[in-house]
Length: 474
Ligand code: HEM
Image (cartoon, rainbow, N blue to C red):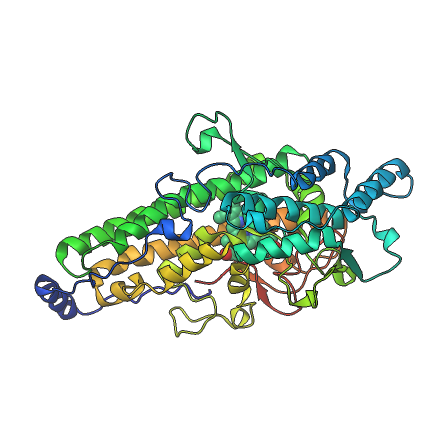
C-alpha cells in the first residue's frame, strides 16, 4: 500500500460535539482583500475551456508563415527516421530536402509576436512540432554514431525566444499537443467538446494520434468543473459555520464525481487509441533530448544556445496537465513525501522519483504555473479545514481515495500501452513484474526497474534504475 494522505477518522464523540459548538459560534472570515481571479492566470472559466484558450489559435502570418508552410509540408512527407531503412531511398531524400530547407530558413526575430498571446502560443506550437519533426525524421544510421543532434538556428533561436515570453519549456509540451491543438467544427458555435476537432497538427497522421489528443483534452474539459468548484470554495465567506460546512461537503462530493468522470475518460482511451499504433507510430515522435532509444538516444544541441543541457527538453506528457496538478495541490497531495502522512509510504515509494511532477510544471505555460502556486498558497487549504472539521473528513477522504483510484487505473492503461507493447517485439522490459499485477487489476503502483527498449519508454519517468513509481503518490 502506498500513502494516500487520508485523514484519520474522528474517534471521540466529545471532539465532534465540541466542534459543533465551536462551529455554531465561529466567525472566522476570510479577509476582504482582493484576491486574483482565474482569468488573471489564463484560466478560462467564462468560456468553460479552462486551461484551453477560449478560441482556436490563429495561424501565423508573414513573415512567420514560412514555419506554417514547413509544418504542412512535414506532415505530408516526413516519416520516423527509424522506419526508413536504406531501401527507402526516395523517402529518405525527401526528408533530407525538408531538413535542408529548415536549415536555410532565415532566423526570424519574434518581437512582433510578444504582445500577442494567441500568436505566441501558435508560434511555440508550430516551432515545437518542427523541432520534433526535424530530429525524429533523421534516420539513425545517418548520424555516423554521433551522440548529439544539432537543432538549427532557424528553429532554436525563435523557439527559445517565444518560450521565454510564455515561460514554458522550448520543446513539444502537453500545451502544444492538447491545449493548443484544436479548431472548431462550426466556428460560429461555442468551444464545446462536441464542436471541437482535436489534432489540428499530427505527426503520424493516424486517427489514434488524433484520439490520443482528444482523450487528453476531454479530461481537461471535464476538469473545468473542478476549477469552478475551487472557485466556489475560495469564495466561501468562511469555512466554519454550519452552512459553509455543508457547502464544502457538497463541493467535495462534486469533486469526487469529476474525478470519476476523468477516470472514465482515461478508460475510454482503450476504445479509441490502438496500443500498437500508439507505441510504435505515435509515441516515438514525443521523445525529448536523450530519451527514446535507450542509453544511445542522442542529446539535442540548440544552435546558438550556450548550454543546451540547462534547457528542459523532455517532451510532452499528460503529467504536464495543469488539471491533475491543480487537483493534487487542492487536496495537498504530498508527492515529495515531505510530510508524515497516513498510511505511511512503502519502502519502494520512498525510492521513487519524487521530483517528477514538480519537473513537469516547468513544461506548462508560466501563467498556469502561477495559477497552481495560487491554489497551493490559498490561506484555507481544504486538507487543513477537513483536519479541523470532522464533518468534512469523510468527503475529503472519499475524494482523495477516488483520485488514487484514477491513478491506479491510469497505471493499468500506461502498462498496456507502453509496457505490453514494448514486449511485443521481444524487447527487454524491466517493468514486467508490476505490470503483470497492474494488468490484472492488482495495482501495486510500483515500477521496479528502468525500461530501455527500441521505441523508447520515456526516460523522464523511468529514468534511472532501481525502484520507481509509475504514478504519483497520494
Ligand atoms: C493511452 C492513453 C495514455 C497512456 C498510454 C499514458 C501513459 C502515461 C505514461 C507512460 C506516463 C509516465 C510519464 C510519461 O512518460 O509521460 C503518464 C503520466 C501521466 N499521465 Fe498518462 N497516459 C495516457 C492517458 C492519460 C490521460 C487521458 C490523462 C489525463 C488525466 C493522463 C494523465 C497522466 C498524468 C497526470 C501523468 C503523470 C503521472 C501521474 O500523475 O500519475 N494520462 N501517462
